[in-house]
Image 1 (spheres, helix red, strand yellow):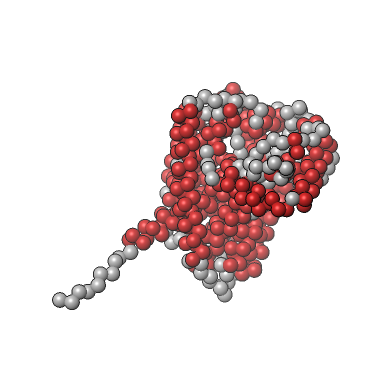
Image 2 (tube, rainbow, N blue to C red):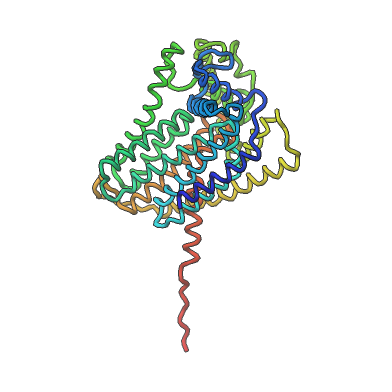
Length: 445
C-alpha cells in the first residue's frame, strides 16, 4: 500500500508540474537558489549573487538543485531545468507519502491509519503546488518523513534486529537526519528533545532515550561538521551552518515588528551579506547582538508579538500560490483564480488541522506506558505511545520555532507530516467508534 500511495502522490504532483510549473521571476529565494546552484554546478563553489563565497543560506537545497542541474545537462536537457526539478520534487513527494504510510502503521494496530495519512499528504493542495517551485519544502519533507518512519520502526521493534537490519535502519536514520539538517537545521533540531521526551514518558527508559538521542545527534554531526570545516577554510570564521540567523532574528524583533516578514530600516546595516565573507559574518553577529538588546529592552511586547507570529504562521496555508506568481513579479492569475486557489488550500488545511488537534487529544488521553521491558525491544503499547508522543511534541516544539524568529506560512510546513499523522489518528478513532456494536437493552416481553 505504501508504494501505491506513493505512486498516487507522485502522479498528482507530476501532473501539476507538467501543466503549471513556471520559472521564477524577480529577486527572491527561488532565483537566489538557482544562481547558487548554477555556481555549484559550474564548479565555482557556494557563492552569493556577486560571486563571492557565502554561508548565508543552509547549503542543502542549493546542493540538491545543483545535482539536478548537472544531471539535466548531462542528458542535454539543461534548458528544461525547471521542469526536471519539478518532476524530481514530485517523486520526492511520492516518497514522503509512502514513508508516512509506513510511519502511520506504527502508531496503531491498523494499516489503514498509515494509508489515510499518506493520502492526506498526497492530496494536500499547498504541497502539490510546492512541487513545481524552486523552494526547499519538497526536499525537506521527503527526508523528514523518511526520518519519522525510520525512528518509528526503531522504536516499535518487538524483537532484536539482525546485524544487517540494524545497519540498514541506522544508515537511514543517519542519512535522513543529515539531509534535513543541511536543508532546515532549526526544524530538525526540535526532533531531538521531542523524541527524548516521548521515549521517557512512554516508559521506554533512559537507555532507549539516550540511544535515540545519540542516533539523531550523530546524523546531525554528519551534516554539520564537514560544512563547519568548509566555512572555517572559506569564510575564515567559525560558522557551524549559516549566517542568516541575525537577519531572521532581527526581522522578528524590532520596533514596529508585525510578527510576519517585513523589510525594516531597523535591520539595515552599512554593508550587505553579498559584500564578502568577513562582512557577512560580522553583519550576522551585529544583527544578533542588536536583536538581543531590543528584546532585553522591550520584554513587555513579547507575548503579543509571539501570538502575532503564531497567527501569521498557522492561520493560513496558501503560501505556494503567492510563490507560484513569484511574489507578485509574475502575476499571471486572475483575481478569481487566485482567490479560488487560496480558498482550496486553506479549506483543506483548516479541515486537516482540526482533525490533527483532535488527534492530539486522543493521543494524550490514551497514553499508556509499558515499563520494565528489555531495552533491546519495546512493548507494543509503549512503542505506539512513544511514536504518537513524538508527533505531538515535534508538532508543539516545531510550532514554537516562528516565535524565535518571525512568522510565515512556510515555517509550519516542516511539521505538516505530524499534522497528517495526527489527523489520521482521529479518522481511525471515528471509524472505530462507528464500527463498535451498539448495546441494545433487552426489553421485557
